[in-house]
Image (cartoon, rainbow, N blue to C red):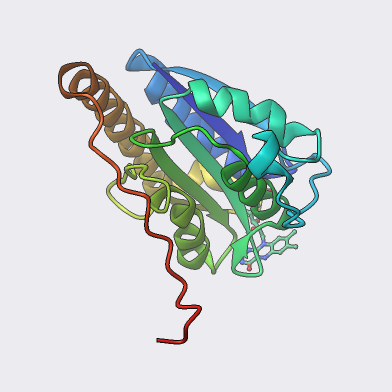
Length: 207
Ligand SMILES: Cc1cc2nc3c(=O)[nH]c(=O)nc-3n(C[C@H](O)[C@H](O)[C@H](O)COP(=O)(O)O)c2cc1C
């Protein structure tokens, strides 16, 4: 069982990384393997809605998105961390997730998703909501904790003083591990729930 972890911050050892480390420590202690992708310091462009992925099964731009897609396909869970920039996930995270989720044809059904956000002062819940929407449109159950998954700080040192934030991360790790184990067992026993996908209505007739 494996969780793919994305650090959306350009700071490899910053606030977001400190929060993610706390979750990773628990996941590993629970026997869940993790692989960390450093995203935030990469040059990632946004989706251009070219439709190439619909034919090719991968993004037209050969970069970290397509590299990560293979890892995401194999993973049982996805943990995404983002710093808050103007009340939202940072631009790199948004560009990356738009392209990763849109361009990949494989099913994400029942892969467990979790978002973690880091802010100095505000915009954390709006950022958290944006990240969770990638999971909830993809049939991915969302792991939760004892508070919304956030830490506060401008530096990693600040985050290490956010004891409740770190506690929230550890509880998130335990819940995520439990969900992955439970879903893995249920999949073996019952298979995945049926998915209907033939309807695609956008009301072109104006009704
Ligand atoms: C461009 C930019 C915008 C930011 N906007 C916000 C914000 O809206 N709210 C906030 O509390 N902090 C904001 N911050 C501060 C960071 O989100 C915060 O310090 C975060 O914990 C840094 O995480 P990191 O060390 O993982 O990069 C902003 C920082 C930058 C560089």
